[in-house]
Length: 579
Image 1: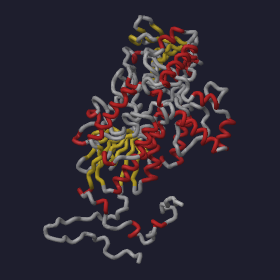
Image 2 (image 1 turned 90 degrees about the vertical axis):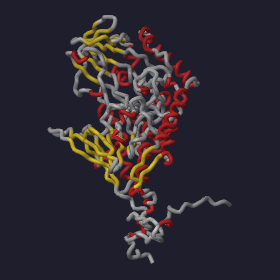
Image 3 (image 1 turned 30 degrees about the horizontal axis):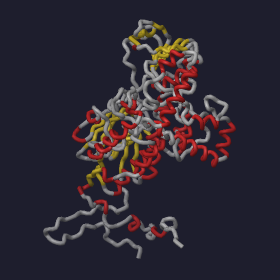
Image 4 (image 1 turned 60 degrees about the vertical axis):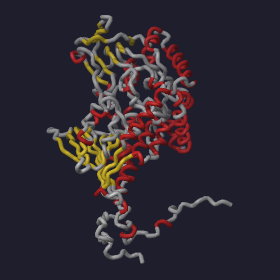
């Protein structure tokens, strides 16, 4: 007993009759994971999580992570502008499995966030799979072989040569805000002073004592202005749009924990207590995330929380801009809070109320070699222009991603980026996305959603291995149904109201393409439980029974294996005893 019978590798049965079709069994045990290669594009937060979870959960895995930058971190590597910081609480912007008790501020500086994610990548071995300074130029699905083929450029070599690679599964961890762009202003590149973009900041540029212009009214500008205002001679803030400057997110909670600092700095005593008392830190973090995840009602039209936010935000802005009522009037939006991304902006309102800041709501007509000219004919000379004007948010202007029948993703998404649960789209087999269209959250923790997206992809790769699947592709009907759900959900939210927002691809009243149609917790629950019936499959050797293998298990064929594993302590599922 317990010995492997001879001849087990010759498992093809004799046909029962001449008319019966001969069936060839797959020569593998039913639980033997076949070799599989996964390529991850991007080493931001999603790519780092993929580099941790895929090797942890997938056996017989060949994993490569291609990153165009020299280091991991994604947006926290690329964004180095003055004042860059997280605009949600630091303790909610970290991995669930790697809590950091040492954040210096309630809204952590960008460099600190970047160091945290590098620490996570080092601790969990992500660098083993990383190929940095490698820019993907094209990804194409080879239908004949069911492989993704990639063209990749080496950015760190003089020749910048291009090579090819291929994988069974492609996981795009590219992100939504990755392709920065210059604003379309006549004469911008004729400017003779210093021209900078917030997403392509030049390290070492000394702006202290200079006259500068900051263009934009998004999150980056709201962080840049208060930082630069303190040290520049003059700051011209060109802000055509209107926006709500929110009270700090989870502000009451933050102030209760940090009553003495307007920037919500953690004292050394706070940090030491977090380190020495893990239970206290755990309770703090749980309480914070509970509060963040309780704010979803603010996104619903006509809700009491939405109405209350209008009153509170209006009064806060009015008070802080009392010395410049014309700025308050110019900045106050006609649309409700959260229609555009809500930004707490600590210090922003105080900064634009200072004497050395000119808040300019007039449209910029053109740029001269010396400065900017607005529509009313006023010319203002400056030493530097900082464009905090954002990113391309159309989802289609990255490298070409080419699916079945040679169809580019950019063509499929020309009118609207339709997906299934934000992670896949039909016509692109074995291709998954993190932070794809309709994946962002208006409130709550983004990082837990990213973790669940990575978990989903891990389960899909396990299914491919376990069931001898050649291709897994979401059904076109599943994509349509998810889009129908989005179309039904968003009209009841403030996101679909009339305001220009990157949530809607930079349009005024287009479809909401950046946000998940529901709460953060809704996304977490949905992504935790894949509905495999929403997908369609092709099988290796066209054999739907191939997943059964050859009638053996790995425990059968390994001499040292435990063949009574199902009785092992901790394996038996003990039901509750009813007395």
